[in-house]
Image 1 (cartoon, helix red, strand yellow):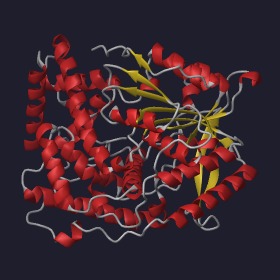
Image 2 (image 1 turned 135 degrees about the vertical axis):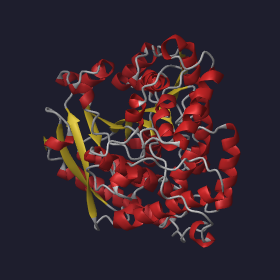
Image 3 (image 1 turned 90 degrees about the vertical axis):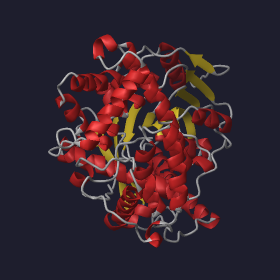
Image 4 (image 1 turned 90 degrees about the horizontal axis):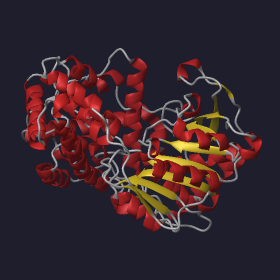
Length: 526
């Protein structure tokens, strides 16, 4: 699960209250019945049958996709609405690179989803062209296949607001000072939801995890594969869990890394509240590391000293945005990458250290949007649009502002780093129009093979409890825990205890006789 944006522009705060009916009660949502689900299942089977016959017309990738040869690209046709398989269609963008080993080593296609919702998987084949050593053994056996999920990138992209306005800063401080600040953020969230409905058209109600899982099965069929080999990271774990529930006998190998709790009650409102708690803990881990390396960064010798530096920086940027563009919202977006990924611990600390030493430019450059990066800003806005659409469409959300206010005010007292920023990002779901899905009851079905689950113990974006929950639900699964670690996306890191087991599973299907606990990967160096 990702966090990349905070609503609110510095120029849009308003005084007073809003009309309650505009923000408390969402438009009536249509019910998703069992009959509808049956029709969708039949439509998905028909779409897969058609895709198997059509195959994929592989060609050199378009130059502006950023995918070098010998990676090839193509499209797979899927229905917008699986209950109406003969109705409107969209094309799902896919790419691949062939396995590097011998014909005797070949085991088919390996599909990948990096998370989001809203992330593109098209860079996955570049793990071969860039000679990523972690994946060298697996690349001998599999064609690496990436795809843009529906609504993303080259797969019928959706949009909710102008991309330049979306990235432009400074935005309002997400932590409200008063009721007027909350009212302004509520209005922005409602406007965003309305913008999604206006700009994304008829496809918007059909952007959800269930349909993306069905798309995944159609892509499997188009590739000529009887069974799916799949890696899902972050939100990609939930996509995998739903796919495994819908199509247990279509799974050959499934690896899920950094796991979303698939409980129906967790999708998605509670998931975001739990995330706020975990981010605070991982932020403390990073700031403690910064303090341990005070000889390099000079930001404080204890966690408390470093944390006070953060509070001072935040207050300074609130009073006068750094460089005119970086306020508290932008600082949160920049600093949150450290709790996400260990690989950013040093770069974020370096920019912060430079600021403290009198050079604010690295921090301003890191936290500011590049308004000249048109393609990047379009992708960022599109990713947020899909994130919002999937989470809002996947499940019912509270429509009572009192509940949002109560829950987030309570959490903010102990976990202030991300709580309000996260709340405003998800608040469009309170006024979202269109039918809400009932989340899938993730469980083991007939034919599901052992699934390999990999998780770090202190992950902020997808707390550890999610891996434990999926492990309970998928019979015969195995859980690898990286203890005393918290980087999001474990399988991309060098840790032989994990890397060797991932290779063994993907190459042989074998898992350990019992769950495994691994020592942490190497601590980042300053």
